[in-house]
Image (cartoon, rainbow, N blue to C red):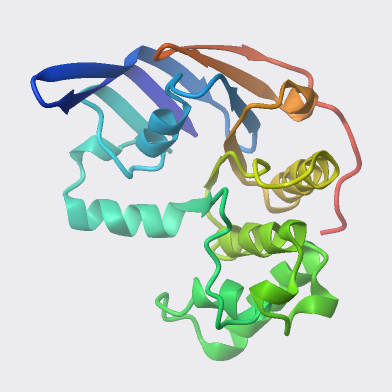
Length: 234
C-alpha cells in the first residue's frame, strides 16, 4: 500500500534550514491500521502531509500502491489524491450550512456519479457510522463525537485506498476518543481500507496493527497484534 524510501523534508525559515524529517524508511501493508505517536514537533504532521501528497519530500520517494507520487505533475497529483486518499481532520472541517447527509454526499458531487447511486452510497456510510437518526442534523446540532463520525463517513464515501487522520481524537474527551478509534477500526475492516493516524495518546496503541514512533524528525516502527474487538456489520 505505502512505502517511504529515504524520505527527508527540509523547510527554510529565512536563512535557517529546519530538517523536519530525517531519512524515513517505512512500509505499510494494504488494509492495515497504523498509528503515529510522538510529541508536538516530532514530525508527525509533516509525515502525514507527505503521505497524503499535500507536500513533496525534499529527498526520497513516496510510493502509494506502487505509484511514485513525486513524479506526478500537480494536476495529476490532485486527481490521484482526490480519488485514492481520504482525510479526517482534528477540527472536523464540516460545512455548517449542510446536514450530516449533505456533508458526506458533497464529497461525491464532483465525481460524476449518478444521483441515485450517490444517495445510496451516502446513506450506506451514514448508517455505517451510526448516524442514521441524525442524517438531517447540521453540525451545530451534533456533539463533537457525532461530528467526527460525519467526517469519517465523508472520508470513506469515495472508497479510498488510504485514509489519513491528524489527531482525530484531540478535541474529544477520552470516552468519545476511544469510541472514534474503535469506529475507525471497524470501518477499516468493513471497507478494506488502510488507516494512518497520529495521536498523543499511548492508551490507543493497542488497537493498531502497526505503530510508528516519531521523535525529532526520525521515525521508527513496529508491528503489533491489534486488539481484536468486534467488527461492524458491513
